Image: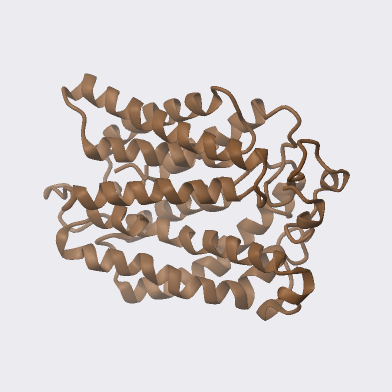
Length: 348
């Protein structure tokens, strides 16, 4: 989905390179994750800045230990690790060769993604009360800041702003948006790690926030420019998905509509004004990604679901048969321990 979304917005001559940049992340990161990434990001869970090597090469993790529950968590988190550098690829379109990208992805993942993930889920940010249900800080803000850094270091695209660089294939963009939206249900609802009420709430919030953001973007374009666009609708949907992610399991009622609507409005006007910037990116807007995600996190802090604990989905999960939080969850268990608790733009 992300490969189509970015590839459609790229120039025709670069679309295959963009697709390969995204697929390369799925090739190299899962290998890196199971070899060393997981243990540095999660083991031991209470490490302040970085984990250790206790689970190097998934030592001691398998089907025989806990019927595969820990292995499922490793695989799920590995998908987050794989898509995070892929989010950066839109910022380096027309700026970075694939050979450079092939080196950048594993290096950045180990030196930046893994430590930040540890800080949010078990590290010093977690200890100070960071609220992030499905990866808003570790994934979206992290990737957004990395995209900005790449843009500042690599400079303007060749020919910008004298040459226009419109999307070469809007059907690809729309197909990619649909696949992203579908996959986002799995990421957000799946972050509960159990099929329970919180997973259902996260699923519904993901649906509503994306719809609200896309609708607001379309309405604003219609009123401001006289007509809506496919690109605007797609961008609004993704902005809403990003905004709701950190709050997906912690808000209810009309909160996801508000979060999505504000994200769509802010990103629509923000991406309109960015055209005057020499550091404009086509497929990844670091400002929109980071700002709407921060809005989602602040909203989850101010409007939590009654009875839910304002901590990460990785370490606090609800019992699958009751809405009451088990006592063990109040001590903030690690992802591998919570199964015993039983609970579980890119705007263009």
